Length: 240
Image (tube, rainbow, N blue to C red; front, side, top):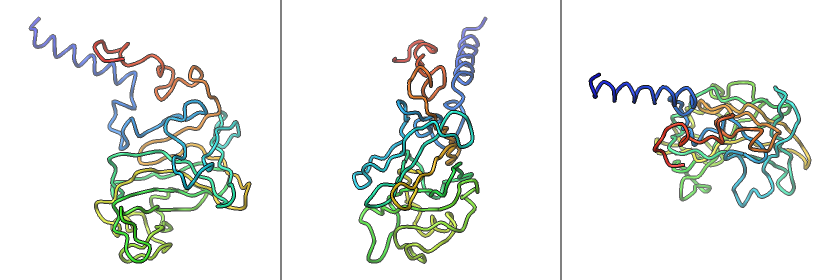
C-alpha cells in the first residue's frame, strides 16, 4: 500500500477512535471541553464552586436530594448577612453576544441565572473600571431564559439603567462587542436558610449533571468511566 495512503488511513482511524471515546472533546460544542463540566460531584466538582472573596461560604453543596433524576443535585442554601447562595463555573473565550440558548436549569424552587462579565461599557455612578457586571435572570429554570425579556444588569448600560429589564441580546448589544463572559452560574436569594436544589444546568451547549457521589472511581471524572484511564493510554505519544 502507498505509504501516504497508509499514513492518512492511520490518522483517520486515530481521530475516529478519539471521537468514539471522547465525543464531548471531538464535537464542536459552543463551550470548550475545559469550560464544560458534564458531571459535577462532591470530590470532583469539575470547576463548579464560588471563588469570590465577597461571596465566602455561599457555594452550593452536592446532596442526594432528587430534582429530575436519581443521582442527586446541587443544593444552594442562603447564608447571612447577604441571605444569598451561588455557585459558578469559569468560562474562557466567550463573548456575551455569542451566548446561545437554551439557557435552562431544573430546580425545586426559585433561582437566578448569574452571568459575570468584564469589558462591558458600564456608565454612570456605578461604572466599573474593568467593565465588570453581572447579568441576572430569575425563575424556576424550566423556561429557556435565552428568549426571555426579563434579564437585567447590575450596572448601568447605554439605554438601560441598573435593574431595567430586557432581552439578553439587547443587553449584550448595550454592553458592547468586547463584553467577555468570565463565569456563569446559579444563585438563590431569600431569608437565611432558604434552599433550592439545582440540576441539569444548560448553558451555551453544555449541560452539567450534579451528582451526590463523591469518589472519582464512582464518577469517572469529566469523561465518564474513562476519566481515570487517560488520553495517553488511548493515543500513544501523548503526555500522561
